[in-house]
Amino acid sequence: MARGRGSTATRGAMVAAAFAVACYCLGLAGVASAATYYVGDSSGWSLSSGSWPHGKQFHAGDTLVFRYMPWLHNVVAVDEEGYNGCSTPPGARTYQSGNDSVRLARGNNHFICTHLGHCSLGMKMVVNAA
Ligand SMILES: *[C@@H]1O[C@H](CO)[C@@H](O)[C@H](O)[C@H]1NC(C)=O
Image 1 (cartoon, rainbow, N blue to C red):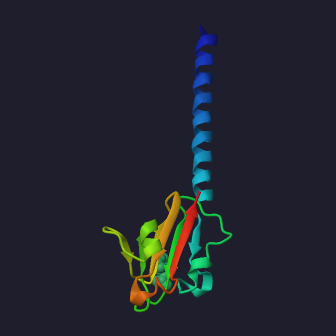
Image 2: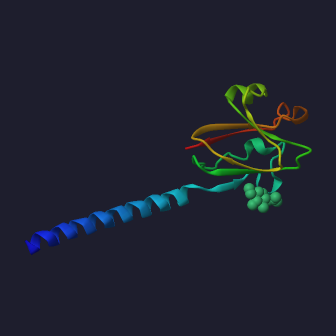
Image 3: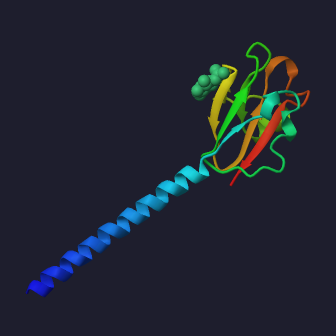
């Protein structure tokens, strides 16, 4: 009897320990995968930001920070069509603080600047998040 209670308690402790390890690993994975990137690095979000993502590895949940002079630029999160045609789809989210944090979704994330034809001048960017 005593032995049976003991093994039940031991099993319970092992399950609890396994849960603790699983939660710990999930926590680490979450921290490890959530990176913050400054678009354009020290140049910020600019007419030449289109090539900035090249060669970088982004993941869903990473944060992009767009920094720019808010009277010069904005950031509009668009779809592929909006990106290709420099158009803003209905419901597209517009950021205009000059210090905007955007969480990446899995797949392609498209951003354009709609100020004064800047998108047509090449101020657009696709970021692919794994
Ligand atoms: C930009 O925004 C972040 C929060 O999203 C804030 O912590 C930071 O101080 C801001 N930086 C500037 C220069 O406003």
